[in-house]
Length: 270
Ligand SMILES: [Zn+2]
View 1 (cartoon, protein in one colour):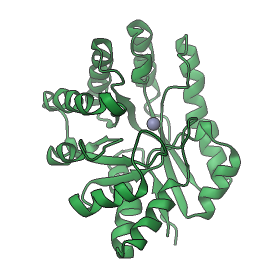
View 2 (tube, helix red, strand yellow):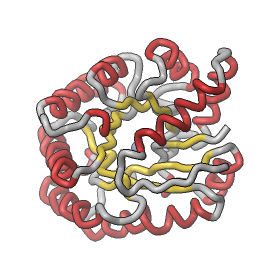
View 3 (cartoon, protein in one colour):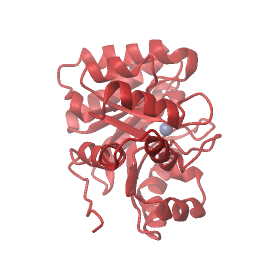
View 4 (cartoon, protein in one colour):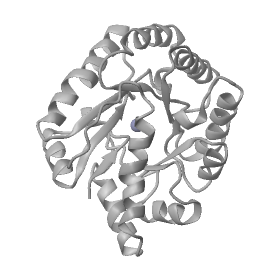
């Protein structure tokens, strides 16, 4: 089955992973900007990272026939340096017309601090002024419930936002309902630690249905599995779900969400 991974950090992966993903049916992926494992010191560090995301990764993906798209921002983990964050947000504004950039992300909260909220709202303001889609990171573990509520409240306070153009990622059992009920897209991240397993993702499909629901691998530099979406496909089959439902979640839904970006160009495989 063809599928799309809407959230995977390929800068952390080797070229062999692109080949494996292509063999497993991955035809496209999107890579949000994220934390590199250390705080970058200058805006030029981000400029180089954004070149990697918009130039080199699409090229590496193309060697295996995979389309690579990206999202730009400064991650919440680096938001405590508000001055640097503002320089990066200005840089993101300059780069939004680069081919393959689908919008602003993954913005959000990490420890739910005041500075994180300031930088989050300034990203949202840029997205609204430029008509961009938004991809959101919700915090981990003990910070997730409160952080997700804070994010949804900040978004709901801004009347300019079209919720159908916002994806809230890393939802779990205690956060998915509110994200969907408020009209946003929800992404389930399959992750060996701290996030969701394929079986729990299937449970959530059974509880909430496929509408505005996505599944991704995150596939970053930590313990993670870039082939987690095929694991989800298998888990769905083993529960007896039809191919049409599986395909809707792993292929049709990401296409429907991405097509709202004016720079999204994609020719479906025959
Ligand atoms: Zn991520």
